[in-house]
Image (cartoon, rainbow, N blue to C red; front, side, top):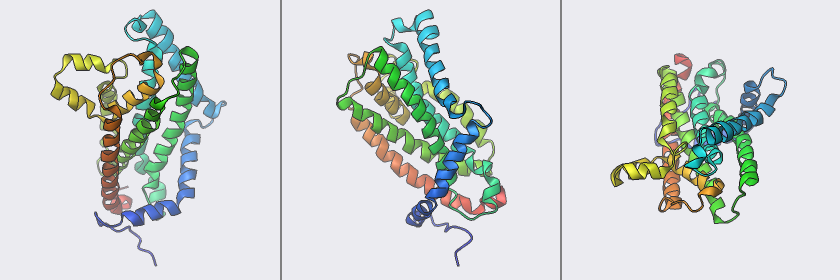
Length: 284
């Protein structure tokens, strides 16, 4: 006999939760594929749209903003610079946004079947990773064609930055997905915060502009944003035109610290989720 509700202990149950998720990994995989298919349901080209959309965006940044509006005069290879930051930000934004509504969106399954509910926000993050991969392919091909890439130690910034985004996106998405069950305004608040949050990272401007206009304390606060560090890590790898530009001091160390804090936050989010999920069926 198995309990109909998971244990509500905060400090105990992490291992049991991980084992349950691992046992349902096939279901998790199916949910990820369902999320991907649902985004392109009834379309003729299907997942090919995941390549067309970032390609069109890149062309807009290159022609309309970079050439016509002259943004490339202040930032070399402006299209690559912006698209690199947007690729990192889009993964974070999509992960949080889709994960936030994942529990409410799967209320029919949750009310009928006992299963680890964490797989729903995890599947949302998995689908976001697929879209990110398509966008990353376009970015890397464009970077190689325009200026090339440096195949040296800087490539290590890419997987490190990606891990920071995935860990923080999963942690925030899991916590917000549980909170959204009890307070439905959460999903609308998240939309507004994400819209503003994009401007808190050096995506359409350089971090040197922030450094030149704020004091050292505010600069450190700005640099404590894990998304900012991840965007800078992506740019350090892909944006070869910025090779001679000033680099944030100890960027690799900052990313490792952000990753470590993110892992702790992910554990806290999962434990909070495990306590809150006991009443999901009643609230839904």
